[in-house]
Length: 129
Image (cartoon, rainbow, N blue to C red):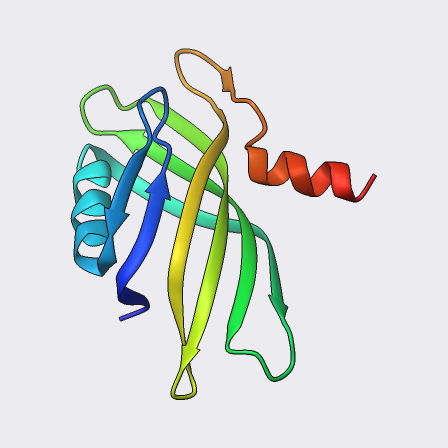
């Protein structure tokens, strides 16, 4: 009940091709399948920024996160660090997710992985230089 029915969700899973989902049902199915392999899963919000301009019905957000996970089969603990870029839309006084993009930044496990900076963050960093 947070996402618009036609919300666009772009996810870049670890070491897999990007996925494009539409709407809350497809997102829910994706998340359910993704976490079923864990006996423990904790989602931690590390930092959040929201930009709303007075009088507008759209907003943007950026959320840095960490996932703490324990695999059912191997009992191995892993962590994934990533960033969400969100666009929100206000409809009849209520805010909804209109678009969400997730990019992993680093992961621990059998291989410690660090990913390239997503283009959305790279543009932001260069504009603030």
